[in-house]
Length: 186
Image (cartoon, rainbow, N blue to C red; front, side):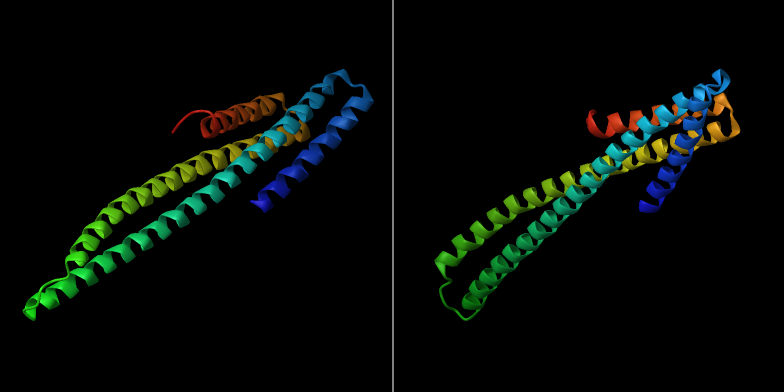
């Protein structure tokens, strides 16, 4: 993502240079270039915000996934412990001895703990999946803003206002992704 950000920064700088020249020359015909530069600056800020939020969701997804994995490991440990206790009682029974009555209670407790741990592990996995989904949406927003910046710069270089309008369309799509990734529930 760093390469893309550096690329968009370079394009943004070039469009600012063109806008600066247009503003100082006082050419009314090219005044719109100043507006293109201003909108691309806004798009760059929105892309940065979108990128920051996408990164935060990627980090949270990873942390939730690790919690889920830890919970599943704990779940398996409880299962192994319960199986060992059951196997010990089965060995005692097969030897004709009385099974350990406390072991039966412990097996039931381990199985109950396992059910609670499973629920927690599934909740962490769901949380991770939600963060991944938001990350993907916000990453698409970053892409739309970067495309908008690039097309805005091209509009300045080629002096075509239609391309500026197209760049605003891409920015509008980026705003939709930004809102979808932050405000609206999945």
